[in-house]
Length: 261
View 1 (tube, rainbow, N blue to C red):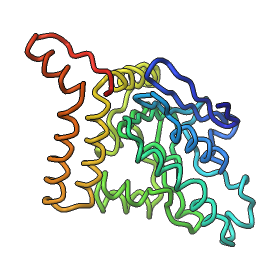
View 2: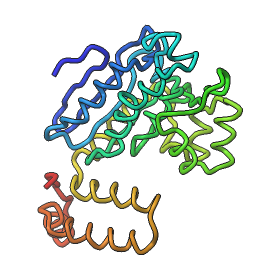
View 3: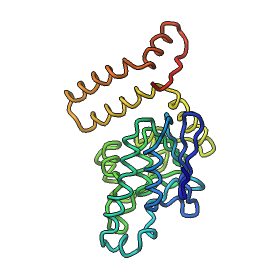
View 4: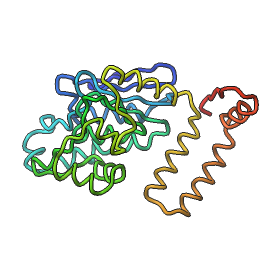
């Protein structure tokens, strides 16, 4: 499928999605959100997804101009419609993906761009990158799942600081806080991200999918619910060909060759 605001490129089991509006620091228009959702809706046999931004920025937030000044800024319902119909479905598609998702943040990740980056399973940022929730400066509130993602990743105090003070959080600070997986020098970002994404793309896909569901259960559920989910997940994963291969590789003292089944 061809897209207008993103690129979707396959390299074996790895799908790379590049936000492709560099002239606007990849500001996310509703069309871009829809195209991201479509790319995730039909992953085919891709076993991992890497998301990054073209040019000097990852994603500078929602493109207000694409929604019209009156609806986006003066509160006439446009933001609610855009979130409900475009941005929130895209974020949900990423978080529900059955395969590992990696974000390589190569510059500003602001507003819904911050949400997009943090919706991934692994977020790697360059030292020049930063994360920003600047809604307070125009009298609005964080959206795109940011409240949920930030509060769970860094706790109430730091989430409140980011949202109410509108402070930029550097890539290094984000790693220190546990907001992201890793911060690396700019020149190493894509090599590090691709290496991680390729490793995951060649791993036990079924087990990864079960882990993701169990982590989601752990965030909102009780211990009994998690114990049940783990037991059921172990039953499913244990019956997979990858589990059989993993067991044989362990006994034979060799590296397992997982097929994602």
